[in-house]
Image (tube, rainbow over all chains, first blue to last red; front, top):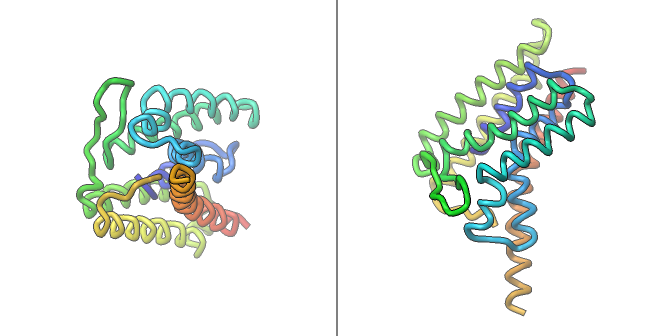
Length: 175
Length: 37
């Protein structure tokens, strides 16, 4: 999932104001940032996915992210939301790709990246839901302001570009 | 030497992913700041 992760982070804003939006987005993207780190040190192949997108890896990220938020924001409710956001990455990616589970076990996933049009519909729906929740955190008079509309339009355009790229180049390697 | 260039190539690839992630992160964060003014 690409922009859909940001949509989920926007939705989470509805339930916590204690964590800045950028931190919610990083939490929702967290295993992908793990990819950046793992690629940078030259680890590729099956070990790569196991280190960033497997069930144990995501659970460790969620525990560490939750504890870090508890320390930084001094709130357990915010820590739980950050941990759930990190875990949400795994479940969201199960729709769009094939993700590792546990060492020695096969990966699972619906692999919607193989059908970019369906992926676009799913991720746009997730973005729309998240944006709608996020929008409700503003007073009614501000809910139709240009920056709030720009977030919805920008994310859907970003997703459209990503899906067109996937359609043109079906195997985009992360590393 | 080949290993060196392979490692550099992988690192460059990871930066592409980082840029894709950063674009979304920065775009939404900046728009949110403007919306909350």
